[in-house]
Image (cartoon, rainbow, N blue to C red; front, side, top):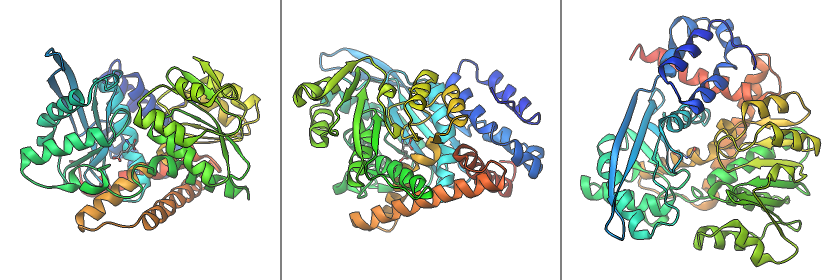
Length: 449
Ligand code: GLU
């Protein structure tokens, strides 16, 4: 493990002791602290002012009971979370995740990441995250609606256009956001569009928001390729996952001339050498809510389904982990390197383990972290907030151009910052330092609050 700067060691030890058992949160904090040594050397004010200690402590953590009744009349009890991590740059902003693995440590890791990601967009949004251990899989629409209504019956008192603006994440898409926005509107008697993002187009949503995380990921990769005077044309790409991020990453890769040859879900991966048939994938995943194995069945013998296999064994030029945290470990990284992969860019949040990232940095391969790569989703949420505030709606083309420009500027800022702090070419250092300095400078200006 890389050594931490001695001024940062006590801060990390404090995070470990004050947040026991929250492995993902520890991982996310350590990853940022590992980049900050040169920053506290160059600008001791960050170490002296305790700004880093304050950054590691959420401004507010809300945990609540979410009771709801199944179609059979049984009462279920889930746990709801909202961690309002940092509001130095704007209202807390970040998604809600509904997945059985959700607990406080996951929400805190996501909220912590979100602070720096949101800062990198250059837009006025703070960092937060929330969710529940509710599993929407296999639940009827009516059950999902009752759950969402119960969840919002508590959450509504903590959020608002100037306070905290949730959106989607794993398990939360336009169906769930619709039920939550409806309940918020009913309880508050306010059509306050700017209180949630990722809304449907007919009720205050923005063009491109659905596509934004996947499209933004690929725009970022395109910028990486441009620095080597290359492009996506003819490239073979592997995309893990088959949810919102994966689907729109695949779409943009195909639009820019690359071919996505494999994607996955928690049951395994499909290998489709001619390129993933996106209409079929969308129908199976978005409409039918079925499994990726059904994709292989529908495509016939030229497509293989590998149950429980590692998608990182598929040789490719570019790998885009777009499923979930820690899905790409050292074995997967070694396999990608062995097969000559040139770029790994994180579409999901923290999908590569620290051991995988260490392997990437000692190899030829170029690695770009989630904070920078997948910031297009939240950036477009901020564009949705702009449209809501001005009661306007922009065209698809205009919004997509804004997204592409934001991704270009994040990419360039990462490389410039990495250069400035002595780690040329490191997107990890660049993203962490550029995100950190923007937030930390605002925190210093706002005083000890
Ligand atoms: N959940 C997304 C993310 O990880 C989007 C958050 C948002 O749009 O607020 O960045």
